View (cartoon, one colour):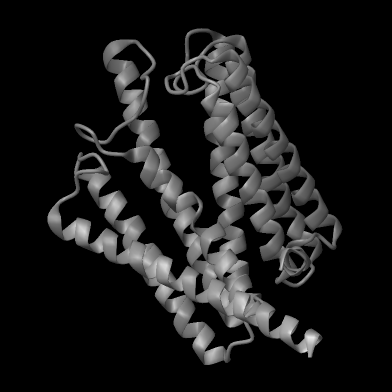
Length: 300
């Protein structure tokens, strides 16, 4: 199964290989800084922490690898270097600046203490806009010329839309941070919406729906199910994911911690989790059942 997944996501063109190596570089950076965090034993949270180069590296690295899977299912075009370059190079530059600031021992976000710090923060904001543009181009391209399966197309479109919504949440977080700096003259240790809204969790769930839905799409393609059944299962997964994302985002914007949503929102989020777990269990059972049947055929 691992080999089949690799066949679905491995890079085969120059554009895809560029994205792959950008992703690999960022994932390696994230892993290295995770080790540094363990050795240093410094606080994991806060404006200056090893969490940022670790989590940012992992998150952007996985996004770049996921974009390889998307590009595998789009027609090869020379202008494809535009979204590939913006996403790959932009993400690497973003991680490089976050990492540089951590090694300098200063905050990477909202920091305008010196001209250099202000320049870093401004460049990071501009680069995020370019990465969002790359995602938007991939989204439109996937809507117009996608060459993969129906379930893969659903996963890609919904996943990319969720990333754009996550970007909107991210800009809201940036506005909150800027307002805090203007009011206090200090960089915030964390960002919340209202009294205790889990802005970071909502942002993270939106960023990584593409991976959740993408893996389910690959699994459905390997499960040898009728196309109609695959579409229904993917629709259930998308509905579940949207429910979870919507519930967490609504709770954040309401200024409540994610552990304390309102009753209707809690029901919505729980229903979404149940749907996602059920779909994942169904796909896993089909794949494991297929392996069992294949082994039985070999033995007989």
